[in-house]
Length: 98
Image (cartoon, rainbow, N blue to C red):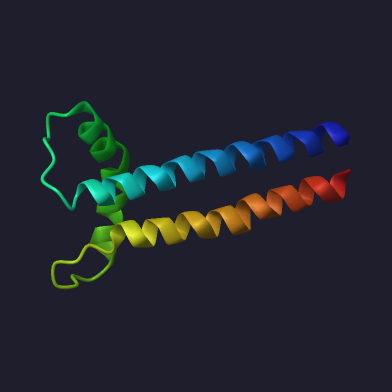
């Protein structure tokens, strides 16, 4: 049973890393949007392609707030929730299985 517990612990650690990296990508995208970036820049294109599918879905759900885009903030809050709830639950489950 300890093998499954170690697997759950590794999945939780990997998921936490992926969520943290995506959160920083969303933060970089939000910061880049404050300036007029070159759309042909590969970094700008990567940030846009990595975040726009999720941000677009969030923008469709939240009401228009007078020109302020709250979708990155909501995505970051969702990421923090997933880190605390899902990753924490997987870690606790792995700890109890030892």
